[in-house]
Image (tube, rainbow over all chains, first blue to last red; front, side, top):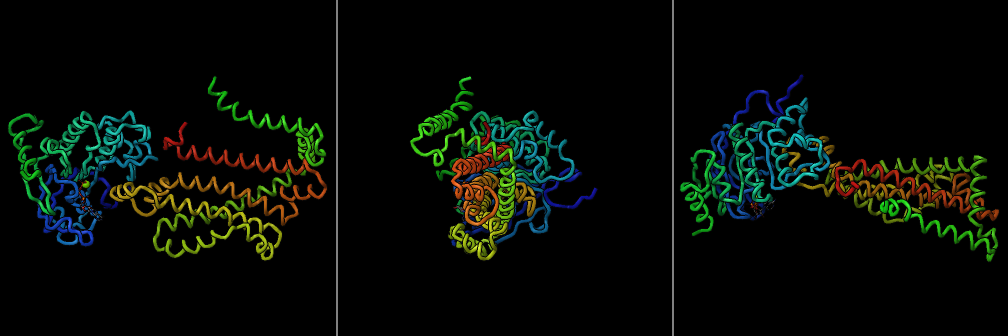
Length: 252
Length: 255
Ligand SMILES: Nc1ncnc2c1ncn2[C@@H]1O[C@H](COP(=O)(O)OP(=O)(O)OP(=O)(O)O)[C@@H](O)[C@H]1O
Ligand SMILES: [Mg+2]
């Protein structure tokens, strides 16, 4: 069988998480400067949360990293290669699941894959607990289940980098906690680099190894979070961290 | 039980009453039966036309015109819709011209079609094709353009491009709209055919009706009208079945 080195195709060998470097990254839309200067290095396998007010440019940053937008200045590199040359394997999860409503659950998971992906799709659906729904239409699933399928679709490609743009903000509190556990578990297990945009500081504290705050087009807070997992959000260190990030966002 | 009455019986009550009333009124002979024949006469004439096979010949030729026109016009409309929905360049090159032609009622071209193409098959097929092309074009274009951009971006993120992006994202996304255009086009198809066949023809259902008019065979005229109605309905039912099947992922199309 012929194997071409197309970027989003999963490789046979173990996936290596990717190192990301942003160098004086800038982005404007017309006269509007969204990101003025972002310098950032993300270690392979790190779970990074990005917080910031609405409109601060969090999604734009992800879209730049994903190559869906072109930067107006600066550089993005993956494992030392510039983003044009790199074939880093990355996937994205959105606030809305963006499952194609005309494809069954399993066909959504296998979207764009070639070769024999059915077995892999089944096992990844099993890991998000939805194997029995594989022949259903997405519209018959609950919001939380749809996001699980979207997660399965992102994971089947064995991404080196998983980007999550507020994937849980449309879910109810209980489902959200379940999903946080699932994402944490799967990230620990697979070891990919994760970039999570969220409005929920507790979520950031709960999941991330590192929390970034974006304000006025640049990173104004960058804190590490070494707390062991699974994390107890009511512990002193967690509460203090949450307070620190929140008060910085609120400017108090 | 109540449900089946509502869906299966109730829709036919008014047609049955109308038929009954028609029979009663015409048997009173207020108007001459040759102008206003009772349903029984219409049925007898229907039977006569069937058993002499005359009807089938005319139906066959009419259906051939209808579907050839639909195929040609539908293909052109669909292709142009997809092309112009897909490519900005193509859209700006063609859309204004297409819209200009669309604004001419296509039946107004009937005399011109006869002059240019004669009263043979070509002029009728041409008019049907022209008529069905626009609703299919407009709805395909609209469907392609209104595909959720979130799906498109996601698809690209997951490695779809070109034909794959079209086949997995754009086409299914546009399909509901394409079906709307197609079903509308079926109506246009019959309408165009009826008009074209009554004016310029020597066979087909329209000719049958016009010929009957000369000999004051009112019941034959009514038979042809009923056949048009039946085929119109049949075509729509088949299209609807196709629509339900193709769009069964969409909760709006599931019962
Ligand atoms: N394609 C675009 N064209 C013009 N302006 C844009 C575009 N995309 C984003 N913007 C602008 O860039 C700014 C940042 O948008 P972005 O979506 O990155 O914010 P965000 O931090 O993700 O906000 P939210 O938390 O509400 O999702 C906004 O002011 C937005 O209007
Ligand atoms: Mg956003």
